[in-house]
Image 1 (spheres, rainbow, N blue to C red):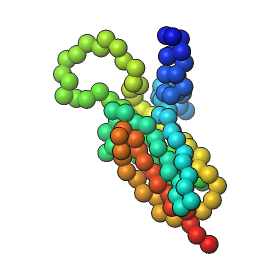
Image 2: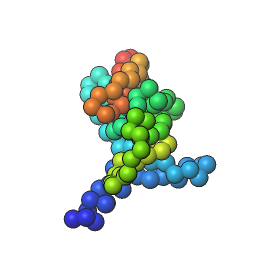
Image 3: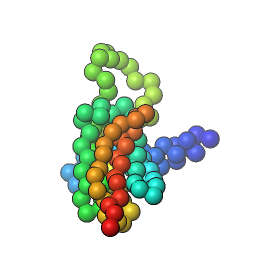
Image 4: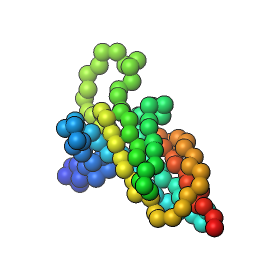
Amino acid sequence: MLARAERLHRQFFHIADTRLHQISWEPPADVLETRDHVVILVGLPGVDPATVRASIEDHVLIVSGERTLPRNLGRLYIHRMELPLGPFERKVTMPRGRYGNAEYSTSDGCLVVTLSKATG
């Protein structure tokens, strides 16, 4: 059971090595599509939304930032730490198509990117 939990943890919070050889992590993402929109959810538990950067380049959504411990905790002892800390970056390929406006919001610990499909 412990091995399964470790596999799930690695699956959802994939550790990646960046070009600068800094340890970073990739948050999990869902890509959903309706008739009029593409919605991308990026799981960012414990990340301050004000510190998240998001951009779209060549049909790829790039989300980056850093997860830190809350500053108001003071001195503490860590007994267990499963949520990754440090810088993260996630690149999510969007479905092919033409898109209009991109709207960014946060909900329940997720960045929500809503892309309207261009008509015509």
